[in-house]
Image 1 (cartoon, rainbow, N blue to C red):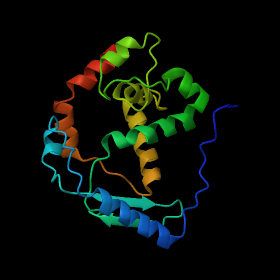
Image 2 (cartoon, one colour):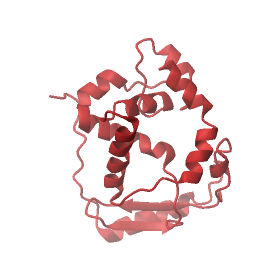
Image 3 (tube, one colour):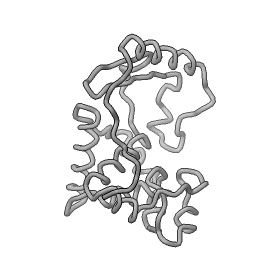
Image 4 (cartoon, one colour):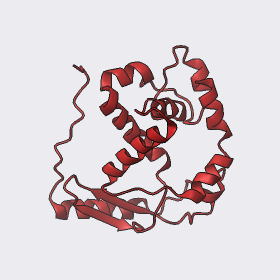
Length: 187
């Protein structure tokens, strides 16, 4: 039995009008922030129009509240990390996932190789690249394809629809993923 605090939501959002208002306010407040930049080390992502910005909140009942560019399909990238971690916690248990992965802050950039070397026990954090790679390795399945199906099916359930793979982005990332390949080799 886990001694960790419960991570279960009530599943209840405030009244629909209030949620619509809050989503609209969040969009209005942050749409002018342009300090970020597209990932230029992934050519397919560098080509995405950087002015796109949308906010969408979907309740557990399927209610949808959105503002801005919410019809533009985008790749989920690192947004997948907490969801994959949740799938692994569900598959092997939260305590076992924490024991095998750790949840410690690295204090380093999300894609740091140094974090792997500093963690003498091999534990890192599922929310940084090294930890996400380790998390993915714990997916049930006898083959890479079976592990991938487990993750893609789980992410699709979270989304409430089948999530496709963007082949152009996949190829672009695969050609430029030397850092993550290096992290995987260190693990």
